Length: 468
Image (cartoon, rainbow, N blue to C red; front, side, top):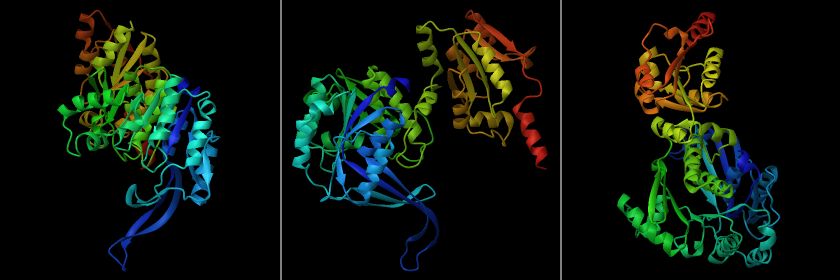
C-alpha cells in the first residue's frame, strides 16, 4: 500500500530458517509404523523474526534487520533470502562458532507430518550487544517503526530489548513487542505488547484458563505495570482484544477458511507496526491487521499478505449496517446492487460502471455459496464465494462487497438503505426487492439495460455444449 512504501521498519529478534520438504505418502514403512514420504519438492523461507521481515517486505516497506546467525549452509540460505529482498543487514552479523537455527517440516498435501528443530539456545553475545549499544544513532536513522520479535532463542534479553525500546521512545518511534518470555519487565515501555492468549494466560493467570471476565482486569494490571501504551492480545478465531485507557475493545476475526495459522501473529505484528508508523489510529491498525491475518491463515505455511491482497480485502465488509453508518458520516451517496456474480463477465462490468456513476460509493451485495445453490441448483456456483468476492474487490468501480446468505437481499438493503438501488433492465415490470424501503427513505431505483447475450447461465451452457 502507498502509505507503507515510504517506511523503513527496524526488526530485532531471533532469525531462523524454515525448511519445507513436500511429497506424497502412499505407503507405511515396513520397518516401523510410520508413513513413507516420497519427496517431490523442497522450499526454504525466513523464519522466526525473519517472518516479520517477510511480511513487511510483502507490503512494500523496507526493513533494517538486527540479528545474527551462523556461517553454516543454513546461514548461507538466510543471507541469500535477505539479500533477495534487499533487506538492510548493515547491523546484522554472522559468526562461525554458532549454528543457524532451523525448523524443518515434512509435509504431504498441506498437512505437516512432523517438524524437527535444530537449535541451541544461548544468551545474547556480548560483542553483538556492544555493537547495538555503540551504534544506536545509525541503527535508528530513517526508521519509522520498530518490532521486537522475541522467539525465546536468546538474542532478546532485558538489556537488548531495553536498548531498542529506550531509543525508540526517545525518538518517538512506535515499537511493538511480540513476547515469548514470561518476564515482561524486559519489554517495559513498549508502545504495543502483543502476546497471544496462551502466552498472556501463562504469564499472568498462573498457567490456568483465562476467562473473558479476567482479560480486562489482568490486561489493565499488565499495561500499567509495564508502561505499555497498548496491550494487544491475539485470540485466534476470536480476533484481537485491545486494552487501552483501562478499557477493552474487541476486533472479531474476519470470516475465512482456515488452512494454516502458522505465522499469523507475525503478520499482525508487521501490519500493526506499519500502520502505527504511518500515523494511523490504533483501531484502524487493528482492523487492518485482522484483515491481513484472515488472508494469511487461508494459505499454507508461514505465508504473507501482499499490498494488493490487503487493499482488495479491505473492500470486503462483514456488516452492511456499520459500513453504511460510516459512509453516511462521511457524507457519501451510496449506490447498491446485488447478485450471484458467478463467472463475472462484461455485462457485469458495464452494470457496475454505470451504477457507480449514480453516486459516490458502490456497494455490491453478493450471494453466499449456500444461497446461490438454493437459487440456481446444486451445480452452482461454479466459483466459490471467496474467489467471487476477490474478483469483485479487484474491480476499480467496486468500493465494497458484502455477502448475504438469504435468497433475496431484503435484509441487507434494510441495513444499508442505499440512496440508489440498481438492478438490470430485465427487472422492468417485476417487484424489485427493497424498492419500497429505498423510496420511502428518499432514495430511488435505477434499472440498467444489460448487454444482450451475456449471462453466466448462457456462458455455462456454451461451455457444456462445446465439450459434449
